[in-house]
Image 1 (tube, rainbow, N blue to C red):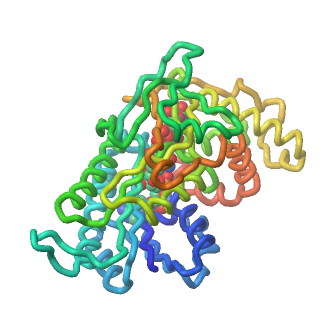
Image 2: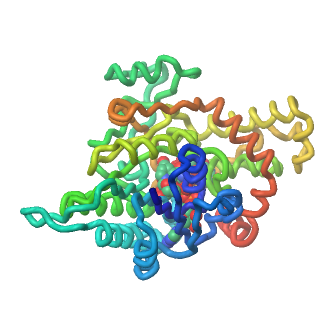
Image 3: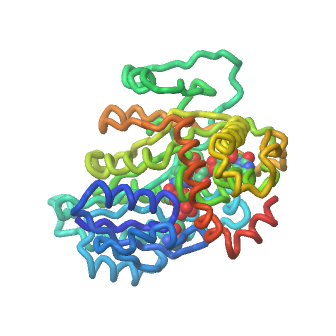
Length: 396
Ligand code: NAD
Ligand code: DAU
């Protein structure tokens, strides 16, 4: 089998490649990545020397290049991670988001359709070679925002037996901040230019299913965290700033809610959808870990402080003294324009149909993530060289 993985030098794409190469011996991967500020070959250094991996530097919007890849390799599955992914950047500069996220997706869909078609059925719909799939990696942000300020002590309402089963054995009960969740039936109602571009791509993928019966799936997942996360996003940014003794910028009151999903659990979910997802269907992938940003930041500070005490060896990484690692580092700054209040995924359909389970509770996941950053400071230095400094100074 040949997978075309776009955006494979970015955060989730790279984790997915590592997951697939470890799990399957007979899958070869062609990576197509433009290597924007968010893509880094250092992230996939080991994988690049694996003879099952081919790297192509280039843009998913480049029709000729994408065509050539399909001509050269018999691609069985496209997993489209390539995207401009940061909401704050989309507020500054929406154009590149529309281009990469929408036109890029269409370019990939067109090439896959052309190369996978083997004829037409009696109604004129294209017929496809067996076993092909186009998997579009999308986000819960396409659903827009949910309410967030529910009264203290409101009980979690679990509607289905499947959810009860998921929740029963969790080490830490999930915290839920409202009664509504996004299901796959929730209407798309995006707020930011980023979310809108992702919703546009989702709709295109759906259009290729409805209009051409293309073998597609869309996955929509919540906020990922874990190794190789670029330090412009909340969790890696604050880990980096804590270690440097810098202020931790918290937008507005910090009470916005996100559902946090450990990246490996996301990769597992995508793999399940590729193998068993019903064609044409969207699947939600969530972590059952809703939390307010301020709590995430405090927990990260506390975990780093604890790890530094437990393993004093790590203290040599600090650019500040250990006493300074406390909640006073938090600085409330200007809120994000159009800031979505709450995201919350209901993954029941993915659980019921595919047996998906978000295995990593947040306390376990955040400790693994922090340790990874402590052990991989060279990677951090590498990815924040160049434009990052300019971006950071502009933002904060
Ligand atoms: P990322 O920004 O870390 O990586 C994006 C990768 O795509 C980079 O390697 C970059 O070089 C590449 N890229 C960008 N433009 C390209 C282009 N025109 N052609 C080819 N390559 C290009 O993003 P991520 O966080 O890994 O997200 C991956 C996907 O998952 C995105 O589609 C994103 O919308 C989606 N997603 C992310 C999250 C999250 O929490 N990070 C959650 C839900 C969905
Ligand atoms: O929900 C899935 C989405 O999660 C993905 O589709 C996006 O690609 C990904 O970037 C992420 O979007 P968010 O905007 O939720 O992630 P971010 O890490 O930028 O911000 C998380 C929350 O923290 C959000 O409410 C904004 C807030 N925040 C963020 C930063 C960078 C701060 O308070 N301060 C910050 O400095």
